[in-house]
Length: 317
Image (cartoon, rainbow, N blue to C red; front, top):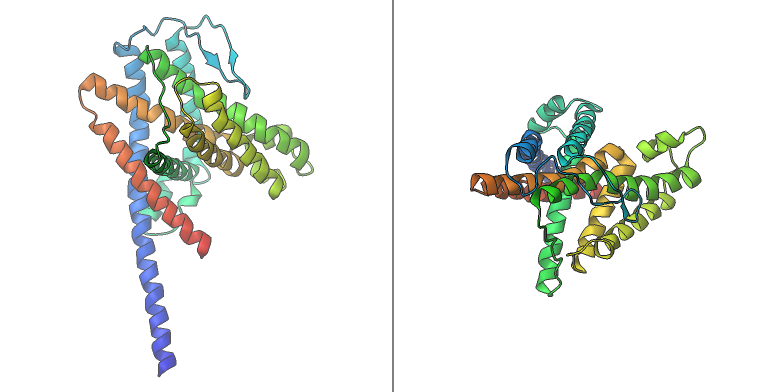
């Protein structure tokens, strides 16, 4: 009788966990869907801001800024208008986003499974990217709050020209992922960890499928993340020492995304962290309301918390 009661208790516990998991998956799917919609909207909205609003300098003016083509700042003189640079970046990010959207299964079919409570979000790379992007935002917010309690500030970047700052922030994900992830992780991984028959391009695009797993790749990810964190205070004005912690965490997440899911996943997650908040911030200035920016922050933090809970459940399962 006692064994029967114990069996019923364990079965009830499993049912309770299953229901809780389905609820978490449903919430995760709903939040991810809303974030992805805001991602889609940010594409044309950003272009509208650049070409149809007054953001200090004009889009025909040349952009003359530091470009981090390697993990050290290199200044490149350009005779290309700000608008032309923005459109080249815009098309590049749209292409990478589309690749993620359709691989390995299309987003809509996976989203339907999630809304039904099936644990299948890992079947689409854009959902994985949004999930880790949300974790990055939630974790960064937590780090900022904790550090502020101890008087450690992250600082902020002051900008005189909103348009140039917006385009520079849009450029940063591509140049920094090429520098800090592809060069500092991908190249050493090819030299020291590549499997027999793997090509350089295969390793640089998605290391996970073409290198030996273990301490070596983990060390490369950590080293790249630390250098990424330090670079924010060594080569960028405005950031304080508290930024090192937050940027290092971001480097770990982006490094993992690059290693596990590919360069395009890391670039889009980094792009989302830079481009989306600024797009809705400047759009709020134009339209006189920051409601969309506040909504974006709420969605990302909430989704990040749910995503952390789901990953903890997988880790301890």
